[in-house]
Length: 443
Image 1 (cartoon, rainbow, N blue to C red):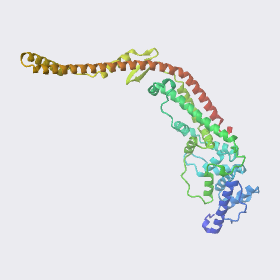
Image 2: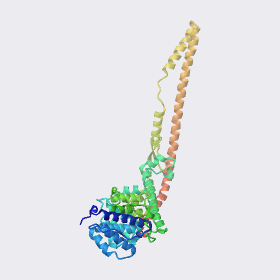
Image 3: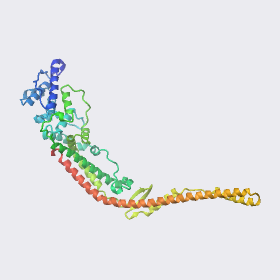
Image 4: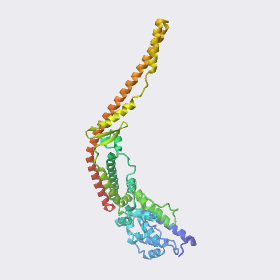
C-alpha cells in the first residue's frame, strides 16, 4: 500500500496540523485538542487511524476499529506512537500489555539502540507505565547478560570518575612517597575506591527513593505530562513519527547508554536501571577490592629516603643499608680537591723573598709577606670548604637516620590502621551488595 503523502497534499497538511496540536496538548495537560479530528484518511498510512485510536483512548471510547486499521498498516510504528503519546500525557497506564513489547522490539549488543527504544526506555524508567514497564525494560536488559561482555573498569570509572592514583592514609601523611609503594598502596587505594563506590550507590538509590517519596512518584500515578520531564527525547521521537522532526541524531550502543546513565549527574531513574544491570559486575569488583584492602602490611620494607634505599625492619632501620647510604652521602657530599700547590708555591717564594730581603733589598720583604699572607688565606678558604662539606654530610646523615626512624614508626601506625581499614572495607562491600541487590524494583 502506498504511503506517499505527496499524493494528497491537503490531507497530509490537515493531518500534520492536527498531529502537532495533539502533541502540544498532550505534553501540556495530557488531553486531546477540544476540536474533533478533521483530517481525512490517507490510504496505506498508519498515522491517521493511529491518531483516531489515541483520541478514542483518551476519551474513554472503544479504539478497536482504528487501532486494527493502523496496526494492519504498520504495527510497530503504531505501537511506538501510542506508547510514547500516552506516556508524555501522563496516562501510560492505559497502554495494552502487548503494545510495549511490539514497540520496543529487540535490544542487541551488536546494534545501536534506536531512538524509539531509548525513548521507551526513558519513559519506563520514569515510571510512565508503572512498575510493570520498568520490569519489562529490566528483563530486556537482563536477557543480554551485559556483564559477560563488559570491562569492569569501565563501569567503575563511569560510577566514580577521576579516581586518584595514590591514596595517602593518615599514618603516611609525613611520608607521602611511601604511599606509592605497591605493598602499601594497593590496600589503601582498594579501600578508598570501595568507599567511593558505596557512596555513589547510596547516592543513586537515595535519589531514587527521594523521587519515589516526592509529589511526582515513580509510578506516575499523578499523571504528570511531559512538560514536567527534564528530557525531551520522547517528544522528539513523536514529532519525528508524525513527520515534523528534523533528521535523527546519531544512535549509541547499549553499553554506551548504560555507562552514561551511571555517571554522576545522570537522571536517577535511568541510573537505577543501569545500576541494576551493572550489579553482577560491581559485586565482583567489590569482592576484589575487599580482598585487596585486607592485604596484610609487610613486616619489612625497602623505602627511598633522601634518594637512598633504606631497608626497614620492625625493630628499626637496617644498619647495613644505613651504612651504605652514609658512605654514599660521604662520597657525594665531600668534593674532592687537589693538593694546595698554589699556596705551597706562594709560601716557598715568600720565604725566599724574606731571605733575599735580609741579604739584598728590603722591598723583597714586603713581597714575601704578601705572598705568605695570600697562601694563608687560600689555606683558610680550603679549610672552610672542608668544614662546610663535613657539616653537610653530618646533617644529611642525621636527617637520614631521623627519617628512617620516623618511617619505621609510620609503618607501625600503618599496620595499626590495617585492621580498621579492613573492617571498614568489609562494611562498605556488604552495604554496596545490599544496595545493588535491592535493585530498582524496591521503589
